[in-house]
Length: 284
Image (cartoon, rainbow, N blue to C red):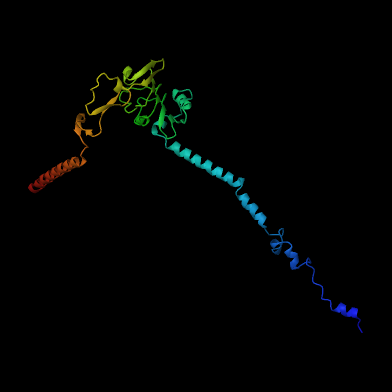
């Protein structure tokens, strides 16, 4: 017979498994979601924190270095393209501007100007200085008019021949012109404020506006105005609404009438020649 104590022992429920035993769900619950996938430090596993660190590292110093390299390559390509696009007059003579030349001094003392080959350019590529000294030139060449925007030109130490009076058409901004000692300044003393002669060169300084210095105020017609066109040069320009000989015709030039007359004349001559040739063909 069992005692009451033994009956009470049998009625006790079986003990539940330990919450933290190996292989139990409670063990995984205490470690969080990473533990269910084999643990944060398990082989071949990457935690959420490590993924964030890798994403941050992809935007770190390595990517910045790549951007800097790309920017440097782009600037280099633009510089090469600009060098290749220089006007022909800048590369007409081999070599570069001498450091002690007046063109180099002008370019270095003026902001936002740079030296390329034989030219001094602004940021837009406009030629403001041209140094063609000692280039064995007998004349400035066919590309010389590309430098009509220059402020200073150096042509000394060249065997220049002929008169340079008509060479500087349109050089209205030119203020300093350095020539060989035996070559006269274009326009003479009337076109420059000062002309200074040295042993090896001659410097023409300060271009005058002949429209202000001319003694004949009526040199241009009534409907025209005087405009400077370079050292010792000027031209008369018709006022708005006037054209023709001595700016005497008023109104715009009729292109329709001009081409109409030209077309009808050409057609008449063509018919006449065709008829003449046809008669000769019949007689023969």
